[in-house]
Image (cartoon, rainbow, N blue to C red; front, top):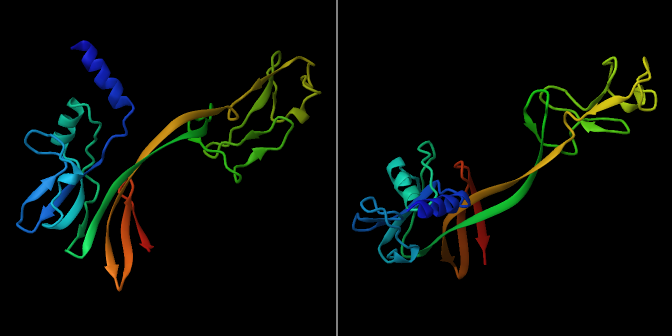
Length: 223
């Protein structure tokens, strides 16, 4: 039992949590949800009766369902503030729905003075020096040199005596406050909901791209 729980935990770790679940609405006022509210099993998208379908929507997952899904090894999170996304359908419109999962490596910096993260872009200000470093956009900190003996601070290498303290000629410490670059894996899911219809012999697709935070973008395609 313990091994099974560990395996389930590891599986959840690598899944991107669902934030939306779909519900297919039929002409007889019944509906087919992605996750059954009684026994929480998942209905397949292919189970939808397209002939009776009049509306299809994405809805924030209720907390009672997300909790049960997690127990069953399906990563899910309840975000009740997300807006529902619905489209009306008829016999001339064919439903389109799919998800896309993305993985990328994200590079970032953490300022050791204020502790905040920031990203370096072409517009980020730098200390212009032999040992250049980005300037923290939150607190203005950057790398600097400090004398090991007297503690004098030098903002640039060019202010030192060729790497030695200008006051006591002692060696310096190079303190990397902002230049250390870190990397982490970034994962996200996009939800696509829409329909295809034939207009005067031309196939047209109207698709909404929905982000995990509820932002919606209309994608229009013609073939």
